[in-house]
Length: 261
Image 1 (cartoon, one colour):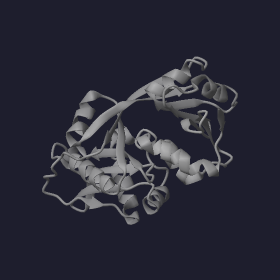
Image 2 (tube, rainbow, N blue to C red; image 1 turned 135 degrees about the horizontal axis):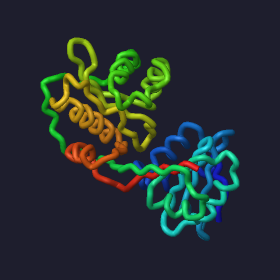
Image 3 (spheres, rainbow, N blue to C red; image 1 turned 45 degrees about the vertical axis):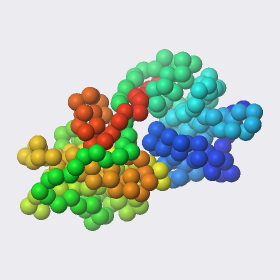
Image 4 (tube, helix red, strand yellow; image 1 turned 135 degrees about the vertical axis):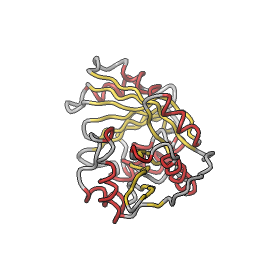
């Protein structure tokens, strides 16, 4: 049976999703932030004959994320998307999305990324610099730093105020290294929830590369998260980048797909 989920389903839903907290980071975060009954977010659940939850489908604006344990009602989830005039995007674990995509129209674009999580930090931090955790007062300095990293040009926060708000609310955090009063390396989180956090914005200025600063920032970030009972996770695009993260303690948990329709 598939039905819309409501606030009364929150405990059961989160217990189910947190069995794989990193894999379900976005669904958990959106439930904790926005609940079940908003004009831009909906959730459906598939239950077996005993009332046990077996799969969840999240709609967030025009995007959907399915998650389920085998076997789950992939065709029924696809039909929910097809009957939504606003549907434009599906993302999620490849093993799940591929089953749903079988019943969807042909996609316009598809992107695949490696998905990894860290349950234990194996990296020994050994850098001759101080690792500092950002406060809301560091928002402008962090944004100034990120603007100097070419690969992040299209993913900047829209304003210092938004960056400051994210740091204030715990939606994000950052660890950084300074040299002569300016940030030269940093690693951040985004989409933090009670069980997991996405590691993003790992970067070092060209003038300070090959010193281990970024790896040290990631290791400290992950150690802090794990100590709080949260699973750090991240996306990466190529095995070379993955090798660096694996030295810190990350291991692959699958592939993450993004389909545009």
